[in-house]
Figure 1: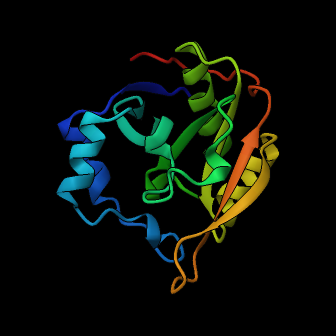
Figure 2: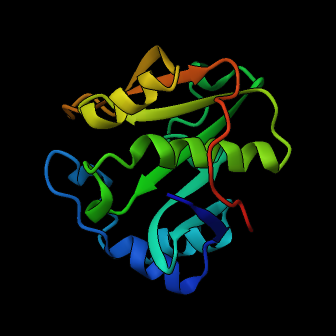
Length: 171
């Protein structure tokens, strides 16, 4: 599948904040948040399309780090570009993950990044963790969300850029 990346616009942002993930992925739901919508439009977020279908988004830098945890020591190494990825719930669990992540990494490389990547994923997101591990990411530590939460997040790195993938990287 080919993926095209474009800066998130208002229309794409409205769709993304309306996505409704089922449990246990519901922690990724944005609940139609106006704050989230505005961040998607104004920040380093790029919508991913397959044909005319919005299938996901990627973000880079501090936007890809956990809110309120951006200064965690696990984020200190500057040779890694933080990347965040979100796939439309209708596309999840259907075998598209690896190609989608590869396309996001290639998009970053085509924009000039030539070092490693770092991402943060919910520890209970087994599907995504399997995809990241298959692509060569390795866990470097955990960040607890807060003392009352059952959610922990894993920080994973890829020391060398993943091999390229098919797909356009317009944007």
